[in-house]
Length: 387
Image (cartoon, rainbow, N blue to C red; front, side, top):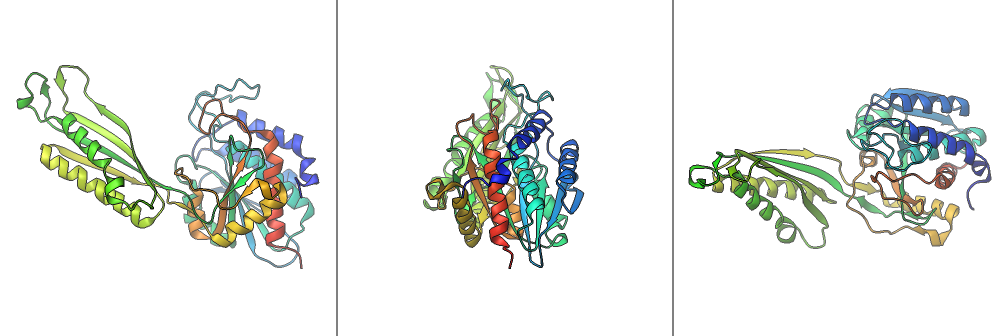
């Protein structure tokens, strides 16, 4: 079964939705105008309930099927990134310093397309909860929606989501049972010594030397403390110290991103970073402050749900276009909080050649929207078939 014919007939309308959203990006939880636009489209579509203001600007909309049954959740994130767009398209961002560089405008469009089809046909039992989430990029909007009781309030029994994948063939799907994406934590380390003239280091306490030692030691954690089959990454991404070539600075800092899949490995990495920083601070006679941001957990698919989603994807794109045991990756995603709360699965869907995600030249491929909408629609019909 290819793209559903009815959804294919929405293609131009969906393109208009997506390009409007692309031109009007909003950040983090401040997606109020985006939410208002989505709510207007949902009213036109004829959903049964629209609940706004969840996690500040999030929406949950309900479509009732025919007869009793569970509620299946479908999620689309809707926030943009603080970047300046360079695509040059005629519907480029109208807001300086903000753009949809991750395709969340496309995610919203796919879910709206599925909503239109499901509200028209209602060939399913139970209910569908359409989840439009703010603050995926920054702020853990998925966590906030869960903490505000979304799953219990709407009796959501299972939950699914898609992320577009540039430079994967259009319409190809990738997922895997178990861990699909990594947890992400951030360590920011600030060191204070005693500054002075570079010609007289004996009169100073040099935070730069301490910083260099710490960074070098942190890079030994993965090869010497983590089992080789347990994938993990520590990347030092920022180092700042000094203002002049002949001055030993008073302060220095570095920042690292820490990613892995297993909770026990995550705890180990945090413990070792603290031990290394505190031990080196003592050895180098500097003061150290560690700000350790415990971020998104790993995105872990429930195996039965991942297998089911892959079967549905095969209906849409064919068996040669679906990899149900794809490799996992070190990126992160706050859909992880929803998968901690309910059974479900997350998939990647190819959109063809494109700039990479979070690149200022990225632009979602409108040809992908009917494919994603068809996947969501068939997922509901297959998960909750009419008796």
